[in-house]
Length: 98
Image 1: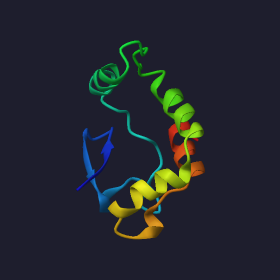
Image 2: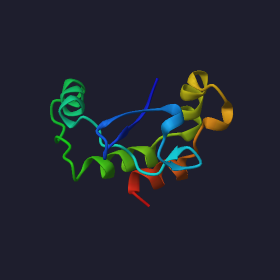
Image 3: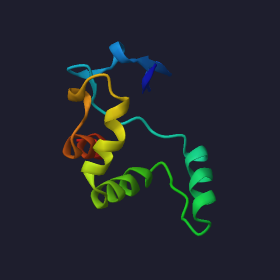
Image 4: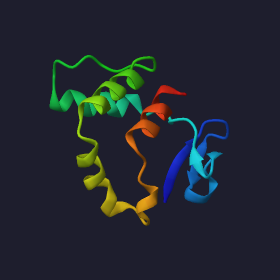
């Protein structure tokens, strides 16, 4: 099962290999911008393509505008343990790189 991307080693990390604090990632891996922009264009032809410099800001803005309880309800069925569910503040801090 893929857990994250190791930028230094250029490979996928398994759940037990996460680099970070307490087995959790300390940075958010960059998305495949070509795939992401293609997908976004399919749903909104007028959307401005995301760049390496703009994707984090766009995701943070979207994350701030949505219901975290809705996110939790969508994600929880896929978690092995409920304590794996991150809170909004932690996710936003990862995205912001803080």
